[in-house]
Image (cartoon, rainbow, N blue to C red):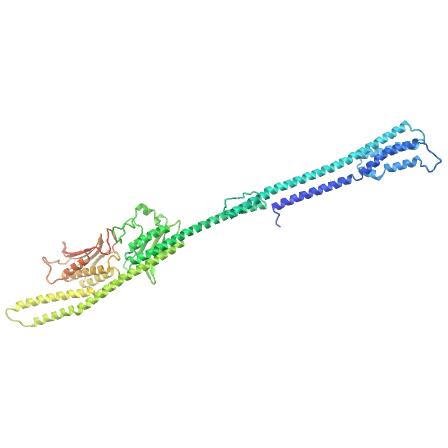
Length: 620
C-alpha cells in the first residue's frame, strides 16, 4: 500500500494535534468539573455545622420541660446534627485517599464529635449553664469545622485554578499549532506555489532561466523539482527547435542560392563547350555555399585504364588538361590546399556517378569536412549537379560525334567522287599509255618516244598511288573522341604492310583535339608511314604523338635509306600535301634525314581550341 505524502502527513499531524488538544482539554475539564461537583453544597453544609454546634450548645444550656413531650429533647438535636455531619453531600467531597489532609481533617472532626462533643452534650444537664470546658470543646470543634471548610474551599479553588490552567494551556497549544500551521503553509505551500506560478508565467513568456530550487520531500518540493526539470527540458527543446529552425532556414537559403546557381550555371554548361571554364566557377561558388570542397570530375575513357580527371576546383599545380594558361581559377597555394578537407586532413569523400540512361560517363568526387558531415539537402543538390553535368557531357560528346560523323560523311562523298571521276580518268590514261607502248615506232624518234612514255607511266603510277592513299584516308573512320583507337588501327595496318611491328608512343590527353585536327593529324601520320614503307626500305619505324608545352608534336622516324640529296623527287606530291595539312593546323612540318640514318618527319602545332601549357602528362 502506498504511504501518504509528506504534505498530507503534516496536515494530518496538525489536525490530530488540534483534535487531541481538544479532547484532552475537554476530558480534563470534565474530570475537574466532576471532581468539584457538590463541593459548594459540601461547603455550605460544613459551614452550617459550625452554627449547628453553637445551636446545640445553646440548646443544652437552655431551660428544658420534661413534661412537655411535644418539645424535642437534646438527643434528637444531636441525632439530627450527626446526620448532617455524616451527610452524603459532605462525605462525597471528602477524598477517598486515607492519608489525604482533608480526609484526616474530616476524620478528626467526626472522631472529636463522637468521643468528646456529643458525649459532653448528652451528659450536660438540661438548663444548666455551659461549663468552660464544654464551651472550649465546642470552640475546638468549630475551629476544626472551620478548617475543614477552608480546606474544601482551597481544594475547590485549586481545582478551578487547575481547570483554568488546563484551558489556558489548551488555548496556548491550539494557538501554537495554528500559528505553526500558518507558518508552515506560508513557507511550504504559499511561497512554493507563488514561485511555481511565477515559473509557469516565465515559461509562458519563453523564459526558462527561473528555477524553483526547492528542498524537501513533500509534493510541492517534488513539483518544484519537476518544474525545474521540465523548464530545463523545455529550454533544451526550445533551443534545439530554434537551432533546428535556424539551421533549416540557413539550409533552405543555401539550397535556394545553390539552385539559383545551378540554374544559371546550367545555361553556361550547355552554352560553353569548354567544360572546365564552364564548370569551375560554378563549382567553387557551390563549395562556398555548402561548405564543401574540393570537387573533382573524372570522365571514363575506353582507351584509359583509369578515369581521366577533367575538372578540379583546387590544385597546387596546373592540371594537364588546362585550356588557358592565363587562367588561375583552380590554383591554390600549398598552405591553403593543406587546409582543405581532403583525405589527409580529416575529410570524407562522396562519389556520385555521372550517368545517362544505360551509360556511365564519369564520376563526381566531392570532399567535405568529417566533423560537419554532408546534409541531405547538400547531397540532393550535388545529385542534381551530377545530372546536369551528365547531360552537358552527353550533349558535348554527341555534338563531337555528330561533327565526326558529318566530317566522315563529307570525306566519304569526296572519296566516292574521286573514285568515280579522277580514279577512272587515271585508269583510262594508264590504259592509253599501255596502248602507246604496244605501238611499233621506228626511227630516230623511238628513244625519245619511249622516254616520254616512261615519264607518263611513272607520273600516272605515282598519281594513282597517291589517289589510293587519299581514298584510304578518306574512308578511315574515327569511333572515339581522340586519336588513340585510330592510331592503333593505323599502326596495325602499316605493321602488316611493313612486315615488322611499328612502334607507338602516345601521350595525348583525351579530347585534346577537335575532330578536324584529329583527321589532319592522322592523315599526316599515315602519309609519313606510307612513305617510310614504300620508299625508305626501313626495318624499324617509330611513331610518337606527344603533348609538349604548349603544343602537340607528332614524329615519324625510320632507319631507312633517307631522302635523296637535292630537291624533292619529280611527281612526288606527298610532302606537299603534308605541308598543306600542317598549315591548315596552324603549325609546321619538318622532313629531314637523321644523323644515324633514316628520315624523321616532325609535325608541331598548337590546337586552336585551347592554349596548352607546360605540364607532364603520363604516357599510355
